[in-house]
Image 1 (cartoon, rainbow, N blue to C red):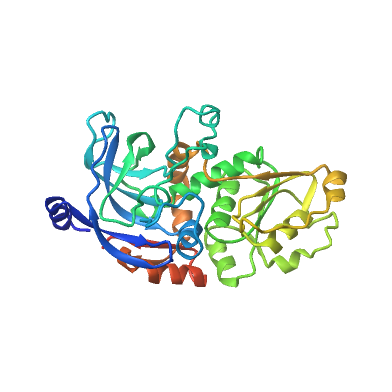
Image 2: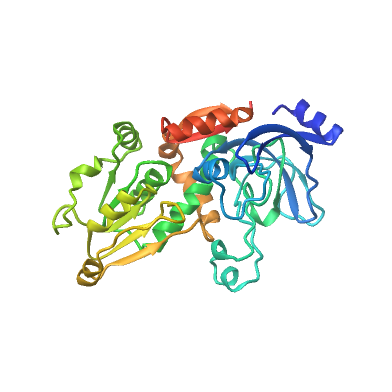
Length: 349
């Protein structure tokens, strides 16, 4: 969006925004320009990333969604206004936003697990998201970025924060053999971070040759088709100390469990259908003393992700695929669902 367009929107008190209805229609609407509260900032988005949550909101519904929804919670942009109580941020700052707006006072927030806050009100789900000319966000959720960081790479800080939470949940990957099931955005970022954090070996398993090729371009040496792992769970070279399931596919989760080494850990990062059930061999869990851990969203890892992205920006940029103008949200969602791109993004051109 140009500055002229921004000023025009402010003058008329209206702006353009993508809207998704409860009956799964997408349209572009004129909505009121948000007025930031005293502890909020108003941001002009530069780039938004699409993720599975956006597709769930569009096609199926997502827990906590408030329709009509303005989607997109992965974004970077520039501050155009600050509330009266905001300190440490100012107009013009290049920023990214932790979309998880929480109460800050419940037992989970106090324990550093804000992702489990019962009062969670995420931007792009329960609050208006960044597929709009302007978006309001709490200042405490807004982080100033290095101005040398590309806007499209900066928009991946949110999924990177989710990855850091998942890797932390594994209780460490240094000097351990790691398997990542799924070569999408989350899977590839997990692999890059595990490599950065000193894993002995990182293997990515994905049935798509295209995704395995992108993984190789991102510096990952070991990329395989999941069929090469087999399914018998025999101990040996095909077992790993840490396995991340990042595909969100039932078969991938079942196969992941087959390949966890004795005393190893399986971290489930993939988002599955809420009604899906997966078969687990309890004797294998018992015999090998396995741990199965869920990793939900990003917890308190957004500040760490801001720092880590500076270290992996070049490798992470390889993941960026199809980019659409923001007002072509429906076309971008269709392309993402088709699986032709790792990270599909929307740009304000």
